[in-house]
Structure formats: structure tokens, C-alpha cells
Length: 161
Image (cartoon, rainbow, N blue to C red):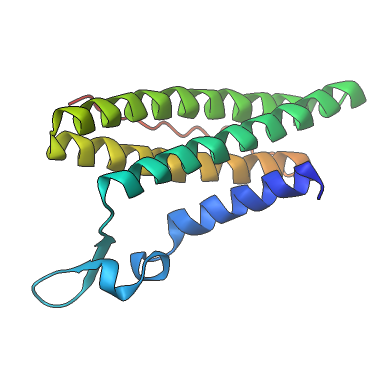
């Protein structure tokens, strides 16, 4: 299978996971219910969350390397607009990876100390970063397709506990 297609497919899967309702991501028996019976976020155990964090890190890393390859090709072609756009997306993916690593470290520290609240906070922040990385990946796809939007700035702030 073509590695580029695999990376794009992974990016699309991450985007779908980030935007799909919780009931579509987890079986009904694993979905927490509120007092009125409405579905909330799926209930994952600490090991499940650790696996999800690792899978998210792998997915964002694959997306980052794919954008890097696209940037190299755009520079080789001399396409300044595409290269500039992809360079911005690559910078945002690098920042997302750094923040994801930080949240993973906090998650592991909280899990080892038994601090469930801190573990849940770190996992929630990491999943928000996954959603942001999927958006950046979609923006990179638009850059590669020649749809460059000028002047769009998105800032994501993850507050420390």
C-alpha cells in the first residue's frame, strides 16, 4: 500500500473520530449515561486511554511526515504559495506533537501516582489536540490541492493544571 495514501487515510480516520458522536466510537455498554439517559463520552480504562494516546501519537506523527514530504515536493517544484501554506501546517503539527508529548507525560505521571482526576484531564487535553491535528491535516490537504486561504489564524491554548 502506498504510504502517502495510508497517512491520508489515517488523517481522515482521526478527523472522523474527532468529529463523530461518542456513541459511534464505543459500544453502548461502554458509554456513560447521564441521569436523563443521554450518551456522554465513552468510558475508557486507564490502559485503554494509554493505548489511545499511543495510537494518537503515531497517527499525528504519520501525518506530520506526510506533510513534510509534500512540503519537500512543493519546494522542489518551486511552488511558493503551496510551500508557505504547507510550512505553516507543518509548524502547527510540530507544536501539536510537542503538546501531545507533554500531555502523555502528565498522563503517565498521574496514572503512576493514582491521580485519576489529573489522568482524565491529561487524556481529555490529548484528545482535544488530536482533533486539532486532524483539522491541521485537513488544511494541509487543502494546501496540496491548491486551495490556500490567506490570513486564517487558529490558536489553541492548553492550560496547565
